[in-house]
Image (tube, rainbow, N blue to C red; front, side, top):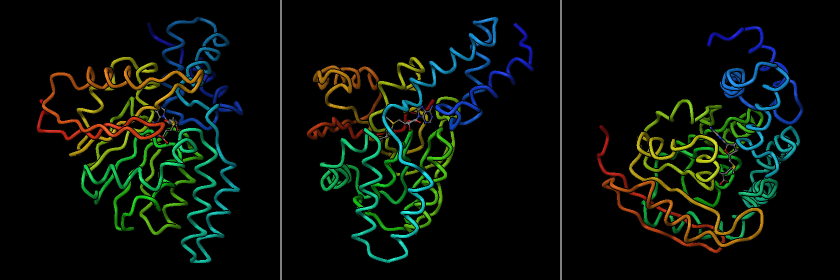
Length: 273
Ligand SMILES: C[S@@+](CC[C@H](N)C(=O)[O-])C[C@H]1O[C@@H](n2cnc3c(N)ncnc32)[C@H](O)[C@@H]1O
């Protein structure tokens, strides 16, 4: 069915102007708008459908800092050259989003134990990164590290590049919808932390092709140990799910169970078609 371009534009503009979802990458909104207008005739219904999908994709309920205030705090603290103070500011900002807030008690061990399995990476992809790149001071890596970060939240990516520059890293954070364009960069390790269940809910069976397409030696995929709503223990379910995702692939998996987060370090072999 051929769509009326003005209707697509009207839906994109309405969502882009909304307070809650306007920070989303326009390419993501446009793709959802086209899909919704195939299903609903009325733009009003299509806008509602796009907003509902964005609620699931962007998960705004997980929290955000005030990005402009966070930029100012980063600028001010890095100007003091006091690494301990800068780390405290990173910690505060990590605490504004549920995924990274839950990881705060683990940070001293988290990357040390993961990199003990993968080796210390010289290059890293952080896919659907949220605020996780601010955990760099806990990674024990030099500022020569090529740290690519991908998300569809525009102010978050702008803020992350601001932080990367302050930290002395190259500003390699990108607004990229990884469900539409898989990351193309080559790296030692790819992080895909606490997002696979939502990704599967939003995009169906795209998780396995995404993992296969990544040009990395190691995949680090993690899951929350308990559900966000309700506190059920999900370790068995996600262990089984991860097994299904990699079933039949010549990859080697090492599991690390942290208190609150289940991590799989997967060494990829040459399996590309
Ligand atoms: C649960 S949060 C962040 C999790 C983060 N990896 C962590 O563990 O700290 C998920 C993030 O994925 C992003 N996201 C969702 N779908 C995406 C997509 N298709 N492409 C890129 N980013 C996406 C959201 O904007 C959000 O910031």
